[in-house]
Length: 169
Image 1 (tube, rainbow, N blue to C red):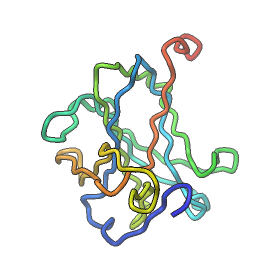
Image 2 (image 1 turned 90 degrees about the vertical axis):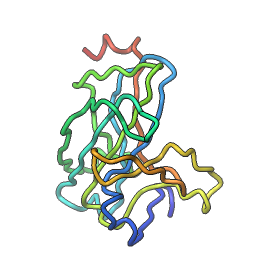
Image 3 (image 1 turned 180 degrees about the vertical axis):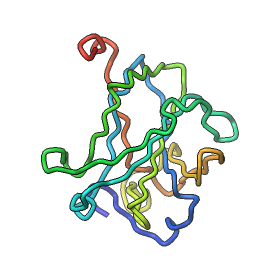
């Protein structure tokens, strides 16, 4: 509970929750700067943290994302005090130069193996927020996404406007 929405449940050991994600649109042409993922103090104390991230463009009527813009993007992150941002970790994608367009739908999903039974989300029945119906989960990228109806995953896509694009190159 708290600022990052940390919840633990034996339900999360079900492989269906291996990949969690958010669907979103952008209002203007944007550059994907990176992704913010939450961590907690016990996570921070580990030497390295594994993550896998996928970004999809397009969404069909069967809740299946269409084109993988970040195929096989995984890594490890070594937390240091300087990287802490109120419990959020920033994973940069500036070097990927991924342009997001307003007429498209995007789906950002993450697999964070070391969380085990924990997930970070805003539980709508325990807060004043209402579920956006834009959070989903699934076992792997070959499967249909299932609506996560009890809240919203705490995953953030960070964008930069195209007018800032020249200074980034």
